[in-house]
Length: 339
Ligand code: NDP
Ligand code: PYC
Image 1 (cartoon, rainbow, N blue to C red):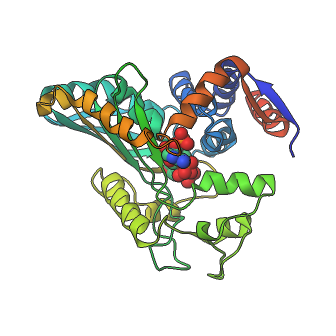
Image 2 (cartoon, helix red, strand yellow):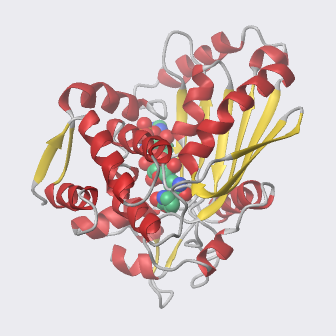
Image 3 (spheres, rainbow, N blue to C red):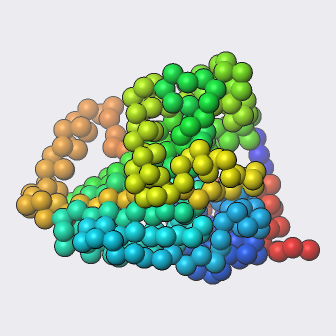
């Protein structure tokens, strides 16, 4: 076990901002990234919290991503807004596009934010939850570098871990949000298992020889597998097409080919869809969603996706987050800047 240190959520934010600034990001970009990092740790998404800051910083220092990028908003059509992110970091691009996406969704009933050339290294629920907070049903899709074999494949990586998130508003409660990789395990979870000396599950992936292994480090060198065989493989394919091809972003294979080994995010594509239930003529939508949830929860074995995150959110506001001391030292060292 690692020796840990307890940090408040504002400590995590400030430390992340300082490390990103010291690595060459401007304040706008640093604060946008630090907010998603803090919120990931707040919600118990350790694999996309401060654990990711050294990777962001390494990519910034090596010039693999542009920490001064200013997202360019393109009003493409009445229901489509595009962002050219110019090799910048995804959190600022999402912030820049959100107001226009919300307005278009409320005007048109459905709207899409298509982001190309941005580096997404985060969880996806921060993209969809604020839209549901505004009364919209939302979906988000992003690709990354090629880590995952298509269903049936054993050696050749083609897809990113290609997550998707879905959010729906609720009555008097935070939105229900799910957020999941299309691989059996997010790469971040495999990295944490490798770091913490845990074994991998057989379905997570294969070693470089195409054989099963319980060593997470071998899977990181080999291929990850889609969840649920060909069904997850089809979702990974769909996300690749929506996120990379429909936005004009880099495919996961293209991002992999230009990757220089910095350990941080690579520019890819990113698609967010928002729908206004009122414009669909469904004034009773939220009540019907609640009835559906009541039916699900009538079985005490069932919980809603996102409930674990929301419980963690309650806890960490007062109790802070334990992180490995070695990670804290690493990020603090980065924040002190070059010697
Ligand atoms: P998980 O498998 O941990 O969880 C997926 C979803 O299932 C969550 O919404 C979770 O809710 C829900 N869930 C889990 N257990 C249950 C249950 N028993 N009943 C009902 N719902 C349940 O997520 P992943 O490991 O697939 O992904 C982890 C993170 O990695 C995500 O945030 C994802 O966006 C991120 N990621 C980012 C990528 C990128 O390219 N930027 C690539 C791949 C992943 P809850 O959280 O409440 O447990
Ligand atoms: O955890 O699979 C992952 C991931 C890929 C890119 C960012 N996170």
